[in-house]
Amino acid sequence: MTSPNTCPSRWSPGDHVVYRQLWSGGVWAAIPATIVEDSSDLVSLYIAPGTKFSGPICTREEHLHVAASGAWKLKLYEWAGQHHLWATVPGEACSIWTIWSAPDWTHLGWKVNPETPLKRTPLGFDTTDHVLDAVIDANLSSWQLKDEDELAVAIELGLLTVSQGERINREARRVAGECVSSRRRQLQAWAAWRPPASWKLPVLQPDWEAA
Image 1 (tube, rainbow, N blue to C red):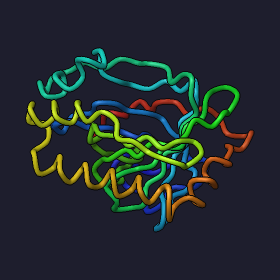
Image 2: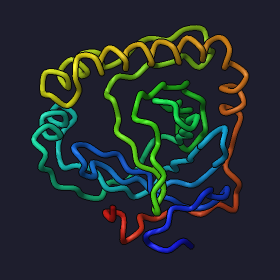
Image 3: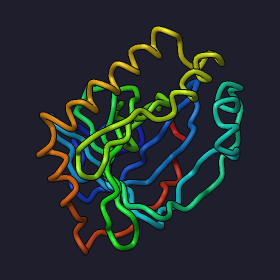
């Protein structure tokens, strides 16, 4: 355990952390996760079905307007239907999500998730999601952008600037292109990964809203 005000230099595999998504300096979502790797080359987290996490009280259609308002309430939800492995190269403005159905572990593909580079905190990691996604087929044959309309709304609402939107689009395209070319072996290795049977379901720490 670390003290409430201390950021560990590295977490160990199997450690439980809180992955928080922020908007306007406030916590938008807080998700308990298990460390798979925390090194100078890669940070990867496992999000297990059944995990209880905190998220905003709003619909998918409302979420950008609620985020832009700067005022929202959170409640507990249950992560259901999928296993996720989220991996990011430290300093890179995106993560790559490997996704399986639950409980049968059928591999569904990957998603490139543009975001601010992970910030290490005493609880785990903070980031801000950048709305746009790139979805990669399970056979690594192709990819396509997703939620371009939502990125346009985020810019219209002032959550992101036009120049930020352009950078986010370029980053999503760059990383998705690498995923089906130079990063193929890495993605295939992630698709073959499974958590140790001894791992327990993480729970949301009581201080998850702490700065």
